[in-house]
Image 1: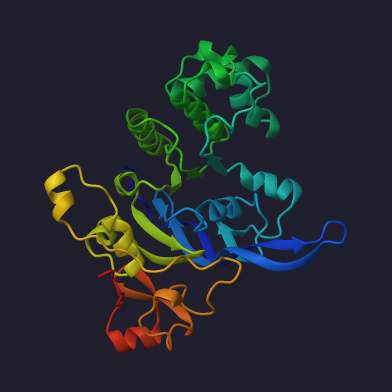
Image 2: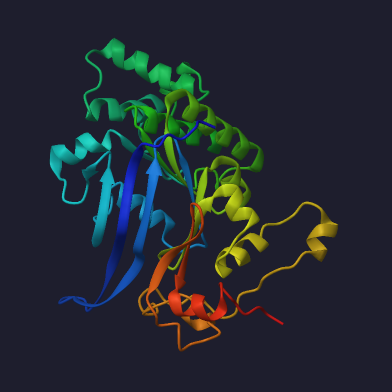
Length: 341
């Protein structure tokens, strides 16, 4: 794992991404918003890997796509290398996108079935005009395929001729084509077999060290996230509820949702699995169309009178931040949470 520097690459502040909900067939009228990302803030250092975890629908993928400007944010600030991305268009945005790429979750749906492997990997070279001749283009495509562990002769094959792991390697090669400094990995191994997952994770780590890359790694598998990440941010209902260095988060989870999430990690030892404490959450997740006005844990809060208080990120130890309503913190001394039974 490459050592992160003190130089900030990405600054995200109060990021919001709302999707409008409309009614009517002819005259559509906005009736609500789906608040997929609601006030996310964090910084990312050069050479660092930030893991982004949480249950399905919490806003992880939306946050990643919004940072890349695949979605135009509703509000907030995204600064990449000191440049504010919100409002950039045309050539200005295209120039920044050379430094920011994405590896998509589905290795089957993210590749054009009508394009050869070489054309898929080489398309960014054409879009950004990074080669000056056909021979240079072919040489660069061969180099990219070799970097990700594929043979250059595979360039003439179509996606259906590859396995899932090989297709994901093609997606990685495509992301590397423009020499980016930041890659957002959107659950890049979730659709792969366990043995292939290890190969792809090792490849990503090797590439990070060789090419001085910075990652945002979005995943469900908490053991994979711990292995590859320097810091981990936990998302719930469009918010970051806890963020800390990986060992600190796993050894000293403070927020009740983080504690419950980590308690769900399966253990290979059946004796330990049968005897360890499981934290079961009461109630369901509130609707992102009508989230609580204050704490997103309103329905599970032991003191509903405090649940509407504004939330702030509190530093409980150096570099370890937790979202909390100040009233709850003052009253309970920490972050109390009801458990089943």
